[in-house]
Image (cartoon, rainbow, N blue to C red; front, side, top):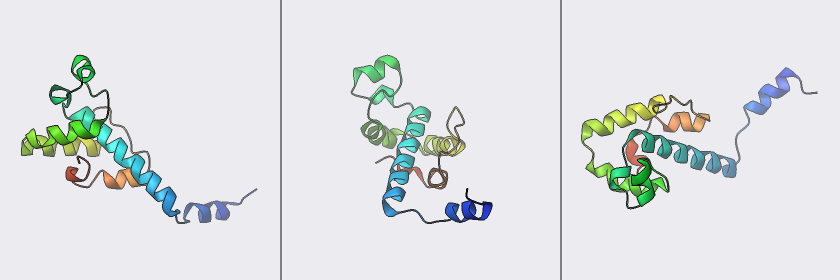
Length: 111
């Protein structure tokens, strides 16, 4: 059975590049989903399902890229603040990577 010092050492080990890339990709996906919850993307979506359900029902990336330039600067800032808080449901970050990435400007996530 590992001792307390063994567990502490394991938690401070560096991640492998593949693990870091996987965590980063998952964090970007989670942040895009938060932006989709905060910003009304469905009115500009080409998919009928999104407009019918009044929420994003498919791939968020094209809708976010299309809708983001149409927002005012105040709306963009309000969306960024809301995403940093965890969206309307106040979801906590799933990893330290996601928590750190939430602080970056939205331009990193909308393309």
